[in-house]
Amino acid sequence: MSENIERRRFLKCLGASSLIIAPLGCSSVKEKESDANKPHYAMVFDQNKCTGCGECKEACNLANNLPEGKSRLLLEQHSGGLEGQPCPHCGKTTECGCERKFVRVSCQQCKNAPCVTVCPTGAAHRDEKTGIVTMDASKCAGCKYCIGACPYDARFINKETDVADNCDFCLHSKLAIGELPACVQKCRYDALIFGDIKDPTSYVSKLLRVKDSVRMKPGFGTEPSLRYIPIVKLGV
Amino acid sequence: MEFTMGLSDGIAWPWPIAVYLFFAGISGGAIATAIFIRFYKGQTENTPFYKAAALISFVTISLGMLCLVLDLTNPLFFWRILVYYNLNSVMSIGVIALTAYIPLVALITLLAFEDEIRKIPALGILLPVIEKLKGVRRPCEVAVLILAMAVCAYTGFLISALIRFPIINTSVLPALFIASGISAGAASAKMLAVSMFKEEMHSQDMKLLHGAEWPIMAAEILFIFMIAMSLFTGNAGMQSAFSAFHVGDWAGVFWLGVVGVGFCGPLLLNFATSKRFSHSAQAFYASGVCAVTGMMCLRLFIIYAGQNFAI
Image (cartoon, each protein chain N blue to C red):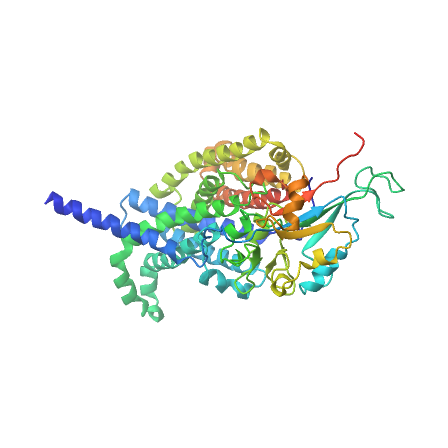
């Protein structure tokens, strides 16, 4: 008798737990497989070379058919006066001796991307072939969860399509036709370098081997694929 | 190296989300309290409080869903959340919980209003449905009790996943939202039970709820204090977020709305007035309105002050 009850309880628990576990297999998001053979695309922003001309932004707007004036990247000025505006570093509105410093603000292409984790529909996802974090506009519901979750505030709503958008290294516009990202192509000072860091012979790999580079907000543990080569003080 | 600019335009989640969190909290809190009392006291009839709670729960969760859908960049996209799932996403898990919770609350509301439906001949078609559903009432109530708690907690987990904001990214948020959901849900159901369903203001159910009010409020105060202290003693980002409690408009909302109206209001109305007044109908409604207002202010404070103070 007691054996029967035990068995019945066992079967009940088995049924209940399978009911709980079964939906885990029904997710419309694919878990990432081993990515040993996949490329790892990275971009390097060399602050020493950037003059803040902003042509990268225009190129981005054009390449990705974005609404007027919008691009997937911004340039934040850290020092050196523009005409009529105070220098962000020393505050002078007139000519100051500060070196002009800019920082690229865009999607950091995190290895542990919070936007991909929080997206309820799998619209913000990692492209299977390239490993690049990109958008499936047909799945995005416009909940803005990814925008709040991004530690870099690097995502935005495209006002024309009403879906979230991020810099995906021109995955669908330029990489798809075998070209470099539009901003990289456009930069005439070679401040932007793009390539596969899994390939030891690529220029970006070689560059990162010899240059010190930093990642933004490493404390978040997101492991960005965007690296920055900061201006180093001379004569110290 | 750092940057402080962002590509998004201001706050990702504005007030409709705070209102949604508010409604979801009331809905879960009200129905959970009613079902708990029903089980605890072994009630079999549809008490006025049970009816009020079921009605409030169903109406508020529906309004909450409306807020949620209207906050989408394009409300017509809402079907995508129902079709595509990502079980790593708190929101997706919440959607699954809500798709179970809302129909079950509707079902419980239907059963709660059996007598009223009988009186209206036009709704006669519902009676055979009600008869059939009576058999599954108990398991449904157990499920709703669990789901109601889950929905309250989910609203906390949903936003605590936003790692950029120290005030929001705290582990006690789900507990705080359960506590404040229960207090505001119970308060609004109490008011409706007395005003619409002719519950006596000093009945046993009401006394029980009235007694539970204070420990729950104490828990809320404790949770808020825990959040404030962890920010105060935290790293630079957390310390700068602590200033949300004393700088800016949202600090005003916190001290006036949450502390003043939400906590001090009911306390003063009940303990600082004459016994005659504190047992009167005015005090009863004023205290209930205070609890609900305080809860709304808490949600607004968390959403806005939280998103204003990013790391």
